[in-house]
Image 1 (cartoon, rainbow, N blue to C red):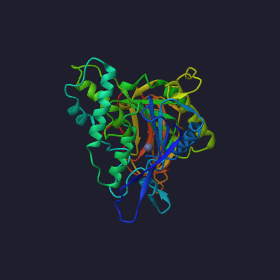
Image 2 (image 1 turned 45 degrees about the horizontal axis):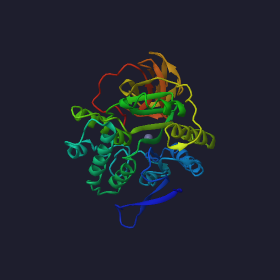
Image 3 (image 1 turned 90 degrees about the vertical axis):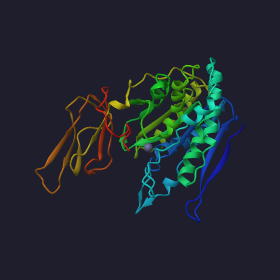
Image 4 (image 1 turned 180 degrees about the vertical axis):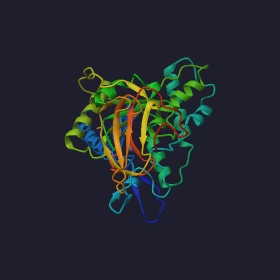
Length: 373
Ligand SMILES: [Zn+2]
């Protein structure tokens, strides 16, 4: 089956506007394993778009033995949001919703359809769960353009064995978010892509895209544990490809080549397979990620670079009040760990995220979910 390109039209919220998703398909529909890759869900995060685009170019000449679906620009709504020349790609302007939250949690709807249908054969259970998830998804009717976008993306990815949602942070080293149940299975992905941190959770809060694909599997496994085994059959991950400005041909080609090697090892693409490179990190709990926020407003003066290994108490940044030259508030690491990401802005308001440190010791519980909105 050759490379095909499909357009999915989104319903419009405003008369006279029309947006569409461009979907690239490779391999035979229904062939296994199926991989799904998207870029730009946060539409001001460009690295994933160019990596997905390079991946499409590489797949055109690859021997795809499974099925691969690539949506290199998966959020045309967000991409259209430019305010006075500034891209606003993380949140929908009309509602303030984060584009990578609020995906349908399909476990409940699938569970109703699985009563009496889970048995001792894990592979038969995988087939039954996929059908139940598809039915639960099909039963939903999105109304708005944004709801239709989320519905369409989830529908493209829901039955995949592998789902890669390509994002980036503000200024960052490569890192990956994935599920507890998917580790260490996903270790070769992290090693190939050169991840310096892997953050694990079972429920990040807010229903991000990767968990909408993967979490139903462990939720249903728990619910039907007395009936039979349900393996975590969808390896979904959010892959953070450095910082917003880390966009280049060289990086995109290297990242796309890493994804091809991963897809080859997983049997989606036929190509020589070697052992993955040595991992650059251990996985750590997402709950152990320290989010340093600004306690006061002011100019951010960083002391630590992304990728720095910090000890508790090491300086991360100063916040300086420009109206009072004597004022400095020093921010320090509250945990041992890797400075995974930091702001790309240099002025902070109170509560703004300054830096994230991937530690190993879970932080005190907070009211909000594990993800910083
Ligand atoms: Zn993002």
